[in-house]
Structure formats: structure tokens, C-alpha cells
Amino acid sequence: ERVSMAKKGAGGEESVVVPAQTEQAKQGPPRKRNPCPGIRCVGGRIYDPENGKTCHQCRQKTMDFAVACTQPRKKGLCPIHFCHKCLFNRYGENAEDMTKEAGWTCPKCRGICNCSFCRKKKGETPTGILAHAAKASGHSSVHDLLIKGSDMVVAAQTLSSLPKKIKKEHKKGNIKRALGTDDGTDGLLAQGDDNTGTDLNALLPVPISKKLKKGNHRVNDMTADEKCPVEIKGELHIRNESTDVPGTKIELPIGTPVTDIAGAELEVDDVGSALQFHEFCRTFAEVLKIRKGQPEKVLQVITGGGRIGREVPSVVADLHISLLSVIQEDREENPSDYSRNGDAWIIDTGKYISESTVISKELPVDCLSQGVLGYKKLSPSLKLHVLNFLCDEALSTTTLKNWVLKQHESATERKVAAREKFRAVKEKEKELKEKLTIKM
Image 1 (tube, rainbow, N blue to C red):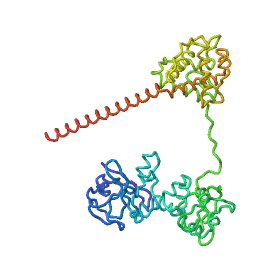
Image 2: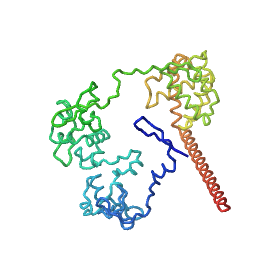
Image 3: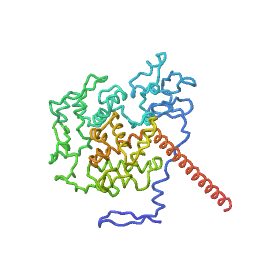
Image 4: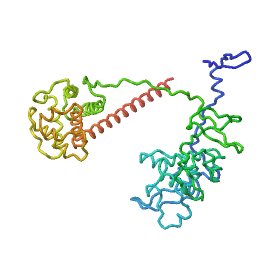
């Protein structure tokens, strides 16, 4: 097997064929991780895998000074330690002072831990290295920065990534001149250990750009958002952040709106409601005993595909009665024996709508109290709203909740069984390979 490489010479590009083995030999084998590195000193820290203490924040086993948590648990005290660097940079606490306290509680037990593991358990995104950004923005620790919110974190990261000369101008109090902001900007000042205030809101629109090449002092035609002023040798210059942006605005083509759902022609504003109803029926067809094709037929009748005479069509009435029975059973009410041709199920639907605490202004209350006559006066959009209201009420019942949990458990069991089956196949394959190796 050979690898073709392009080689540029005096006469142009030439194709050179290099053996694949030679190319692999140049790259070398990947470096393997040492499982037992032993005691080592890196960056002024002594790493000892046997006698060191593991920091909960950085997860490094070092001989650094660490503070132990004294919070009692079911099986003794909390085993978590925090090294002095992480405790100061991430939470602004002095390790020596915390040791002198009688009952110091670690940030994890206090519920303010911002390590990657704890933030993932809370459903939050890990922060990464924020100590430099917190210091640059005037905060005493990462914890103080995170309290201010995500907007403040983004502003702090923007400030920490600015060129050094802009930071120097900022510390002198000339950040408005260096960044080209208006004099009337009234930003939020974040005070930290330093006496200097940081106008973080003024930094939000400033993009993070690459280093400026020498000689690039010309200002091109661009918008205000693409300009990033930089001070070079005492003079203010503006560089072009994006040179490949077209001058004319690109107009995207207008798509054709989808108004046909399950054979029913709908208004554009009613498409979302129809999709919501159809998805609900598809998901809970088994537990609600919804027949195949019934949701499509209901949509067609409601939107005018089938004319409503003196009585509501049976396919529409049956679905309303089925939803009402589930709701009444959950409320420990005796399910009424509704008649398809009667007005009782329509009147009861109006009562539930009027009793609801989260009622939409579009849902009719007075019309449904008139029975079939009131239902006939409703527009297709309002009829869809009535159906979706009953679907939402049924979705909060114990019957549907238990059914969802049951489906989740069965899906989990199928997943575990598939994993076990796959594992057994891999084990069998491994045994066959070993037998073939022994025979050979």
C-alpha cells in the first residue's frame, strides 16, 4: 500500500509516491498513558499517588495543603478535601483560615460546588478555567462571578481575552477611549479585591479577534459590529474582523407554508394545534383506545371536511367522551354515561374549561353551555383549542402518568437485554478467536 503526496518544485507540483509503512514510521506509535507515574514534581506541585490527598475540585492527588470537610454524614464525616489553590481561586476562601474554624463545611455540602461533576449533576454546563476571567473582571473568585449570571461570565471572558494594551488602558480608566464606546454608557461596575471598577456591559459588543498583522493599518468599509479598535504605538487603528462578508444582504427564499395535516386543510395559525393533537393521539392511542384513523377523521370533520348537522358526528363525540372519562376517573368522579347525540358532554367540557386556572382567552365558555348549538357556532380553530385543552387535562392524570412510567421501564428493560445480548455475542466471539489461536 502506497501513499501519494504532492511535492512542490520549480516546475510546479509533482506527485511523489511514498510507502505507507514509511509514512507510519515517521508519525510513530501513539504515546501510552502511564498507569503508575509515581511521585513527581510538576509546576511546583508534588504529585503523590499513594500519600497525596485528592482535591474534589481539580481531582489531583498532591501533597499540597488541603482542607478537610467536617460535615457529618451517615457513615462518618464527609471525605471531601479542597486544596488551597482551588479553594481560593474558585470560592475566595483562605485554606489556613478555614482550618482554624471549628466546623468548616465544604462547598459541595453547602450546595455551591462549581466543579464539572457537580454542575453536570445539576444539569448545568461546566465552567472550565474561569479563574483568570474572574480576576480580570474584578471578582474575588469564580463563585462570585457565577452568582452574577451567564451574561456577566461572557463579559468577563471577553475582557480576559482582550489584548494587553487595551487592558492597560482599561486599568487607567480610559477604557471608553480605547474601545470607542460612548461617553454616556452607564455600565454595571463589578467591584472585587482591587479598587478599580470594570465596565463589563461596555465590553459585551466587542468581538474577540486574532492578533493584528504588521502593516495592517488601513480601515476598510465595514459595519460597526465588525470594527475592533486597537491602539498601536499610541495611535488608534481599526482592523477588519471579517473580510469575506459580502456587501449586499442575502435574501433567503420564502418557503411554502404547510397547511395540509392528515388530509385536513387548515389555516396557517392552526397547524401547530393540529400537530399537537395528532401527536397526542399517536402517543396515547393504546391507553385511550383510539382507533386507527380516528384522529385524521376528527381533524377532517372539525376543519369542514364533514358537515355538522343537528348532531355532532360520532367520531368527534367519541373522542371527547373518552377524554372526559379519563379526567373524571382521575378526579374520583363517577364517569358519566354520555350519549353521542346529547348535550351533556359538551356542557361538562365547558364547565372544566371555566374551572381551569390556566385558561386561554381563546377558549369559549359561554358557547359550550348551549350544547350542540353552541358547539356548531365555534370556528375550526376554537374546536381545536377545546380538543387540546382536554388532551392537556388528560395528560396530567394519574392514568397517563403511570402509563408513561411503564413504557419507560419497559424501554429500559429492552435496552438492558440488548446490551446483555451484545455482550454475550462479544464473549462468544472472543472465545472462538482464542480457540483458533490455540489451534494455529
